[in-house]
Every structure is written in structure tokens, then in C-alpha cells.
Image (cartoon, rainbow, N blue to C red; front, side, top):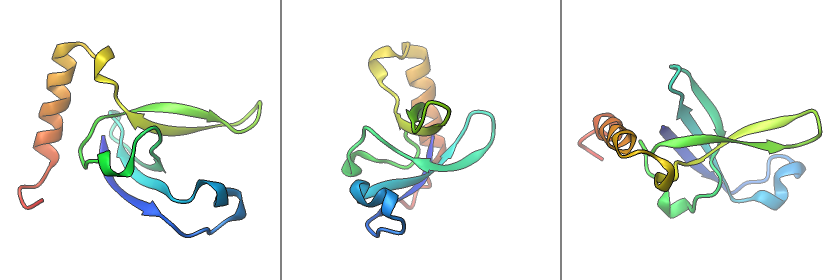
Amino acid sequence: MLYSFVLMHQVYHPGFASEVPYIIAQVDLVEGLRILTNVVDCSNSDLQIGMPLEVTFEAITDEVSLPKFRPVCYRHVPERMYLAFWYMRKEHIPDEL
């Protein structure tokens, strides 16, 4: 689930120059961890705190892959799970937002 995010416009390393702007996000994992990662396959305007995400892997080399996250595709999620995602999202969004 998306906990927080920023849109990075600055090039801090030449290796990321072609990807600017890109999304840096804090993602809450089901296992209880919160990790710093990137969100892909989602426009900046569609990002919402609390939205469910799923992991995808970007192959950097034959031996190294980086975990990144993308929005859950609801077409492939059973209805009971969709309702659980909605419930979790609603419970985690403060009223003042």
C-alpha cells in the first residue's frame, strides 16, 4: 500500500537522468515493513496515498533485479480482495486530507 511519495525532478546521479521525473515512494508491505522504492506504470496524477500496489521486478543485469511497485490491476483481483483493499485504504487515510 502506498504510504507516501514525492516526484523527483532533480538529477542526483547520471544513471537516472533519462528517468527524470520519477516517483520515489514509501510502500507498506503486508509483512509489516515499510520500504523506499519506485512506483511504475502509473501517472503522477493517479497516485493516491493508501492505494494498493503490487511488486514488479526490473532486470538491471542477468544477476540483479530491482523491486518496484505498480498499482494493483483490479481486473485480476477477486471481489472480496478488492473490498479488503478498499477497506484498508479507507482506514489509513486521515480525515484531514
